[in-house]
Amino acid sequence: MKIMICGSMTFAKNMIETKQLLEKQGHTVLLPCDAELHAERPTLIDNLDEDAKHLKENDVLRNCFQRVADSEAIIFLNHEKNGMQGYIGTSCLMELGIAYHLGKKLFLLNDIPHSTHARWTHEVRVMEPTILHGDLSLIK
Image (cartoon, rainbow, N blue to C red; front, side, top):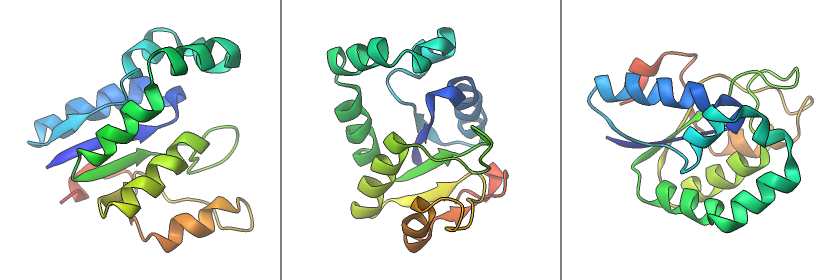
């Protein structure tokens, strides 16, 4: 299956590792176009001015949206971030919405909080993604 990995660029190294694991399972895997850059320069994500410049110059959002469209399935690496289990950031929410609209298979690596802790989880649950509970072998 052709799978796009999405997630906060905080998890860029995890994306690269997950790509290798999924390829061993026989999948074709796409990463965000700047995953390697963020893995090498993890502080870029915290410098919003520099990151915005990078995003615009490289048309990163459109590029990632196209990779979502070109995939059969999307897996969101929603590890803990900023004290929130199952974190999904704003770019990922956009990718999730596009994937849902296009009828892609949706996978979340981990469960997400209840909507009383994060309002966005309500819409994510409505999309009925498969929660993998950390087990990549459940991707079918």
